[in-house]
Length: 397
Image 1: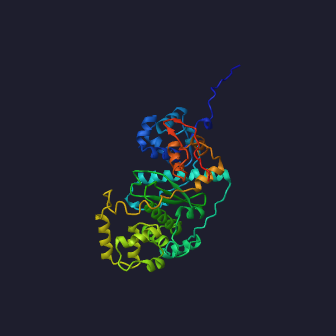
Image 2: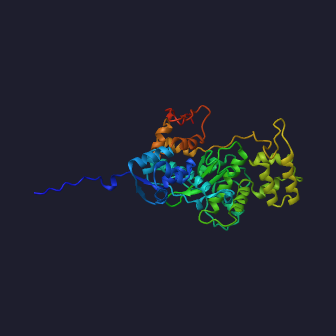
Image 3: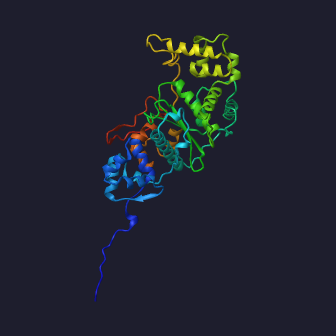
């Protein structure tokens, strides 16, 4: 009797499976080229390209996954976790986008997906629904009208400055992250906004962690303009509209007209700067937009900003305006609260990252560290691969 003995081969589904979007994000964030990664893991360039572009999972060999993890510095679990945040480059809104390369846009999009993953994780864990109070308007609505609707929806009086812009926006359901994200790509771009979630129902703003309360507030207001005006469509003049929205949102024209000095000088604009929480440059633009100063006066004021210097720093007013030290740079808080409710106030960064699709601590920690914390808060320590088990949050409020 002839007996046939077959070699038992492992079924296909037992091979590791990775998602192309995860692989591409890791490569982009590490600043590597696809061909270089393919070479270093011993995979053909064409096959690697198909791997990254695959919309579903792709099976790879165990040793290939190990090499991929080693080359990119991401856990193997990260590559096998299904993407939960879909962000197209076209959905990103930020200033001077036309000056960015495709790779730079991809880097910003990868950071945005990380924010979406973190948000998805904590909301899924808490089961909380954050009510959205931002109005949705047609993209062709005049920016000043949209700004008035936004202030009304947020409960801000027409003649009232916005003291704490981040708190107002977070109470309205806007999720704000602060970090030095995509440094090279965003050297001239202080913030980016987008909608995430299955129905694009969650507004997210990612703002660079910069040492300027004036720029931070204006960048936030600019992104709110995008969120209100350009949720479903972005016209050619979207950036101009967002700038106009931000000016009217922070400095309502009717109120500003009543307070505008008879002769606008840098000195006479300083009290308005501190009252409305904006830069002198922003006041010059809004004043010009409202017809309170002529184009010639606008140019003259800008020239003075560029030539007048502060004592003792020697910096021009364009580099650092007087009053730069009269306010603290605002920091977000909502994500902090959600993480505390979802997990524990004493959770450490290593534990948190394993709950958020195994994103590396070096990317997740800046988003957490950018949240508001009391001076006594313990830092999330990252020293090479040896992570100290310290509390991310340590405060009494």
